[in-house]
Length: 78
Image (tube, rainbow, N blue to C red; front, top):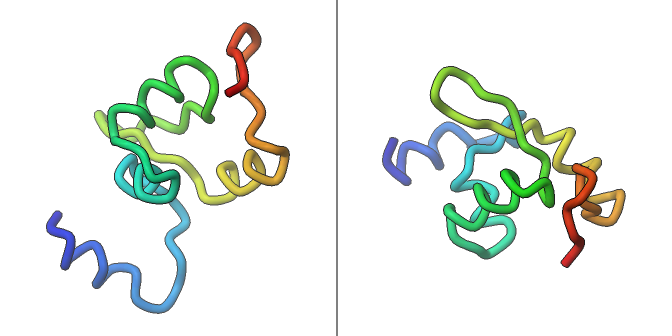
């Protein structure tokens, strides 16, 4: 999907799900870094929808409200 198409789908209401590009932009990091953090348990892992990974807005906002703590034991906080 092109960036223009992504913007067109968001007019009005906030999306219920984030994709990896949304999180990369939200946290000002690369797409690869988002995957690394999620795979290492320092960011919620998300939900697989086929071959794609998505994160629910609610789970990300709850994780942020909780201080962005690691979500998996053994993961070291930054």
